[in-house]
Amino acid sequence: MADVSVLMSDAATRRIAELEDKLAEVTVERDHLRLAYDRLKADVELMRRRLFDAKAERLDTAQLELEFAHKVAALDAMNRELGLPPSPPPPSGDGRTREHGNKSHKPSGRRDLREVDLPEERIEILDPSREGVETQIGWEESSRISWRRGGYVRVIIARAKYLDLGEGEASSSIATAPLPEQILPRSIATPAMLAHVVTDKFCWGIPFHRQADRAAGTGMSLDRSLMCRWAEHLGGTVGATIVTAMRDDAMRTAFCIATDATGILVQPIPGGDHLRRGCTHAHFLVQIADRDHVFFEFLARETSAAIGELFRGFTGYVQADAKSVYDLLYRPPDQRPLPEDDTPPDLAERVEVGCWSHLRRKFWEAAITTKDPVAREAVLRVKRIFDLERSWRRKPHAEIRSLRELHLQPHVDAFFAWARPELAKLDGRRGMLASALGYATRHQVAFTRFLEDGRLELTNNRSERELRRVATGRKAWLFVGSDDHGQAAGNLMTLIASARLHALDPEAYLRDIFRVLPHWPSGRYLELAPKYWLATRARLDAAELEAELGPLTVPNASPTAEQSVSG
Image (cartoon, rainbow, N blue to C red; front, side):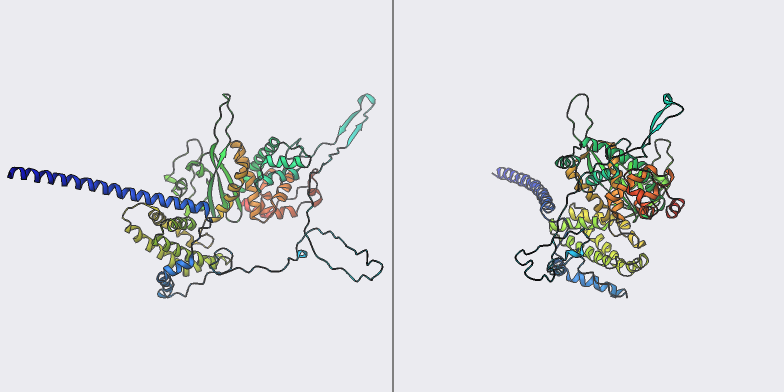
């Protein structure tokens, strides 16, 4: 019996050990499933927020102030402990970061349309029953808005014909006055028509097929394939002339270039096998050179080599997100791969500047999906930095640098001193919060670079604003026809975006450029860039410029543009 008891006890012990091992396995599996469920739940919540909520990355800041009142007090006390004056208060009523309860002033009453600069028509209404019976003493006037549809205009080009009698009737000949230079020889479109078509598509996002439908509604037949050829020819022409001059100027003189990229589809080239092929993926990369130029570059492949080629020769600051394709830009020249062809190596040195909007976005995504108090506190800390930066936005650059050093740098240093221990507490665990904290701490040097100079921006939002026009337009025109079409579109969008940067009407600017460019000397294309166009236009003959076709007197070189080129 004793042996049987021992055997039963051993069997029970083994069974218990097996069950304990199974329980441990199930517990580990359960923990993994819970973690996967939490991650999936967070992803679903983030997608829901992106789909149905506003994209302004808002949080209830009043609630954050209540949750972290002690943190806010600590941030406010930081300057006092350092012997600095109190931080300036954030601006109010700027229409961007309006707090709850802070309603903007809404104008009341009827608009006075006489303050608007519009052509005026007058309609006088008489009372037949009182005319000739009572004395009219005046008018009671009110205003309405009307609209007169413009349309296509047929331009008659009349070239003089001459009869040369010579020495006799047999030697007589007829000669016709030659056509002046045009940007599209033998085209039926004038510069104004070309500018209208290009601006409608690349500025307002109206695809060519809709322009063709609109033209048909007015009785004008305008084929979209014809407009495609116009755009490709014009984009290639301005790209080889004005855009090239602008790029040389930017690479030589710019202090900081902000950059970002967005995807675009390229229509496949039909093959002889009649098989259907899907669109290929390419990118439009934007470069903003200070307050001078905006460039859109078409990249068939967004690689480090392609981006490095776009920045070749530029020495200065580059503001971008932490995407790996930009890493090559910041390497020392001796650590970059040598070109495969005979191109000389790029010896320019560039300095990385981070974007605090990207930093904040990662914490915001963690805050709205996981409701983690650390993520919410990070949003509050970054909000304080943004509020302070906004309060001196319009001041001179030297004063901005001094104010940042006095008021902002303590908050920036405190943010990273707080973020590093919070990341260590996660002990290698993955998730949105760990990703946000890791992103911030790994790129701390780039995120603090803006403190070096008042001309550097806290965020790269200006690049995203420019790319938004591409993202909005591609919803309508969907894709570009080929890589060549993509490059041509980028050149035209470059001129349009640069014109808007300098407060020029894009359509009026392009019309003038298409009129002037065939007559312009090849070494002076920078004078036609939007940055210098107002000065150049003032030196042209207004009557000659107004004509759609005809001779054009080219003035002497602009001193400002010459100085920029020689500098």
